Image (cartoon, rainbow, N blue to C red; front, side, top):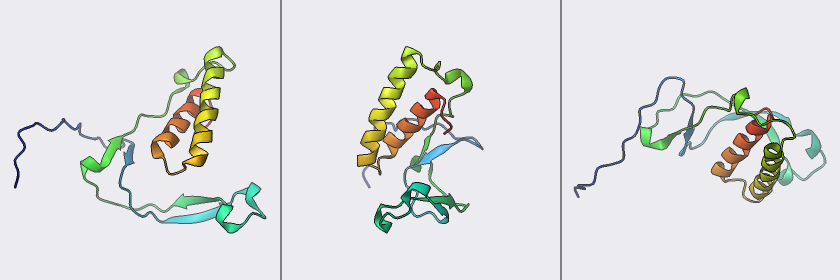
Length: 123
């Protein structure tokens, strides 16, 4: 066994009810709710479905979880059509365009969600 004299960075404990991003979720069961309305007639491999994740209990090590920032409150929203709002909308468009190419990028998806919240869209 190799001993490492460097101190590991401190990991903050989590509290009950904290929202976390699981970096290693494995397989998750879900129930199909419906096919996306605009996808009727598309080949199956191009179709999207709305699914509802089936609740499950899973035990995870702390190192497999990253605390997520709480969703922005109303006070975190930008004023509609302000210059900051317009700039954020342009940024959101860029992020969504990049996400469409790289749909497995969870960090980019988180950025899209945060940006939508700042714009006042339901997330």
